[in-house]
Image (cartoon, rainbow, N blue to C red; front, side):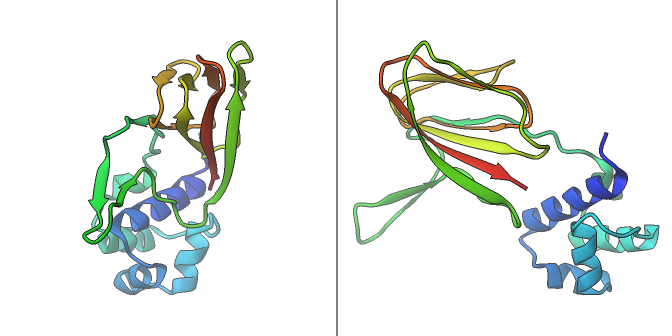
Length: 182
C-alpha cells in the first residue's frame, strides 16, 4: 500500500487536473501558498487536516477522495468510436484518445510485430500506463489477465504497472505505442 503522502499527492494532481484548475488557482481557493501545494503534489511535506480539508473544498471533492487509491482501468476505443471534433473548412476529424496528465513523461514507439513472438512484459514502475493503436493487422493486447483483441484503428489504454502482453495475430502487424510514466 502506498504511503499516505504519496497517495494524497497522486489524488491532488488527479483531482486538480480533473477540475481543470491551475496550481495557483487551487492554492488561492484553498488559502495556502502555491509552493505548499506544489510540495504536496510532489509527495513532500506533512499536511495538516485543515490544509487537506481546505484543498478538498477548493477542489469541490469529499475528503475521502484524497485517501482513495484510484485503480487504473483498461480502456478500449474501437475505430470510428470516441469523441470526435470535425473541422468546418477541411476534410479533417480529430478523435481524442487520451490526455497527458501534468508532469508525466511519454515515449512513443512504432511496433513492428509478427505472430509467434509474443511480447510478455513484467510490470513497469507504479503509475505507468501504456496506450496502443493498431495501425495494421490484428493483435491481442493488454493485461495478461484480460487481453483485448484489437484490429486496425482500435485503441487500448491499460495500467502497465501490471504484467501485460502484445501478441500479433497476423503477419506484419504494426502499432503505435505510447508509454507514459508519472
